Image 1: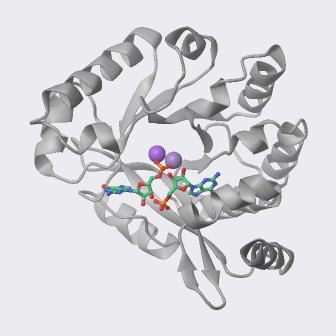
Image 2 (image 1 turned 60 degrees about the horizontal axis):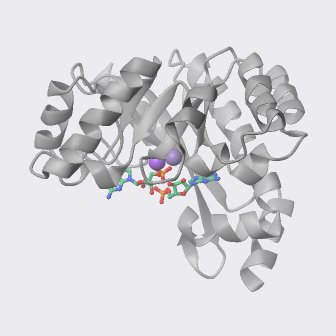
Length: 255
Ligand code: G
Ligand code: G
Ligand code: NA
Ligand code: MN
């Protein structure tokens, strides 16, 4: 409860204490930075830097995820425009909570934000977990399409760890699958994980989706994934989540 109160204060206090970090998404063959994922951090006045795992579920339970998610999205738009003006129009993936997606007002607030920042199509991608696909009502599908109409696309985060059925996946307009870190970790030695990675790549190909491998930490993991036709990767091998300034430096040196 104290933490909830503190988060509410942080959001009321023009989001003082909140900051976005950015983790590069890299073309593993050329080494080029082709996008990034925005990851929120919170500098708590007494506890210091807090990672999202320590406050996102609290924010979801209390409803604070709605103003928090709104702040994250506005901040990502602001940063996109700064990089664009610097000649680095880098697309940004923003995590969207199922609670946000469930609000009927989401598309209208995104539309307002994109219009006021003049965000071009393709600049912002939304990352969802499989739980966002559990509700396959027409209303939910319609909310996806409303965001696509605004120029965004969707990536499915932590793919393979949730419960989404393949028939449901097919119904949703998802552009990219993110292979969860848990399946990448023990590549190339673990035969089961190799089978999951290979099956995900082939499923994505058949459904016309792109793939991003998460949590790539070693050259061996990278090389194995490349040999299976996976080229876009995110992970400590390339970079940790970075401040906006460090992200710019990283992209400059890999461009
Ligand atoms: O930043 P870190 O690498 O510790 O992220 C942990 C998890 O927190 C991520 O997997 C992501 O799903 C979640 N997360 C990070 N930033 C956000 C955000 O802005 N909104 C939501 N809903 N989740 C986030
Ligand atoms: O949205 P998602 O839960 O996938 O967020 C990615 C999480 O994974 C973040 O907490 C990020 O800091 C973390 N991460 C990113 N790359 C790596 C990596 O190579 N290794 C490990 N262990 N964690 C990573
Ligand atoms: Na992820
Ligand atoms: Mn994510």
